[in-house]
Length: 106
Image 1 (spheres, rainbow, N blue to C red):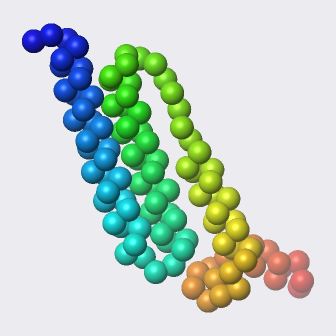
Image 2 (spheres, rainbow, N blue to C red):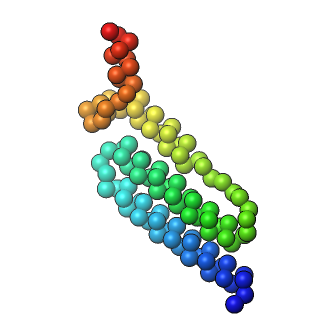
Image 3 (cartoon, one colour):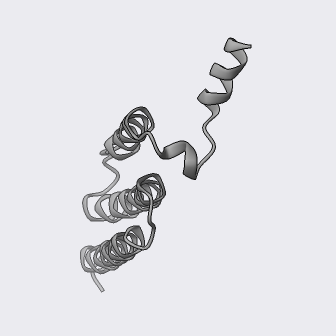
């Protein structure tokens, strides 16, 4: 069996695994009620899928490293926006910055 055909088959299998993992992540994101829970599940899934997909692409093209780390950064920014704008968030989770503000007031 030719080495190119073997690389193609292994790369395709890894990319299909990444696609199935992404589908599970999307389904899992809709199971949660709160935005931060959904975003946490999506960020973990995105990071895993990006790693799997990059592995498949590296198998296809050889050892060329292309990185894509925008998802964790954008998730962090969206979570900060949610904390700053959602007034009902302290009813659902414990926020550390509120504890710091209470210490400063005392």
